[in-house]
Structures are given as structure tokens and as C-alpha cells.
Image (cartoon, rainbow, N blue to C red):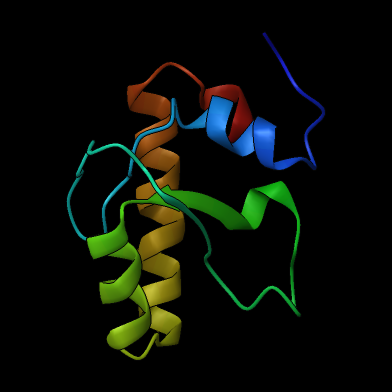
Length: 89
């Protein structure tokens, strides 16, 4: 089933309810929707990924730099390609 793109249900569907990890794939069951950059700057579906509790905490505890943001955007694209949803990159 497909959901409207700017809904949380769409994000859960898009990532198959699985954590994409931080530096490497995680694939644990996700718990949180994470924003790659601040939600105040971009609250669209293209700025969201799914994380398990551990990866979500690590993402925030690192102190996210511009380089981390670029890396997460690339990681997001690679994950979507790997699960056959490259049309959403």
C-alpha cells in the first residue's frame, strides 16, 4: 500500500519500517523518524529517514556537521537503491 508522501505512514513504508543506520546499514526495527537536517529547515519526506533508538541517539549525540549531513544523505540514497526504491532518491 502506498501513502501520501508527506505523511509519517509514507516514511515507514518507504524504509520498510527498518533503521538505515548511521555509517553502515543497521536494519533493526525502526522506532523513530529522524530528520537529516533540522526540521525547521526542511520537514519534507526527502529529509527524513528511520532509525532504531540506538542509531537515533547516536545521530544526535555526535553533533551533526555539514559533512555528517552529506554522508547521511548519501547513505539514505544508497539504502533506497538497495531496497529497490531508487525512484524516491
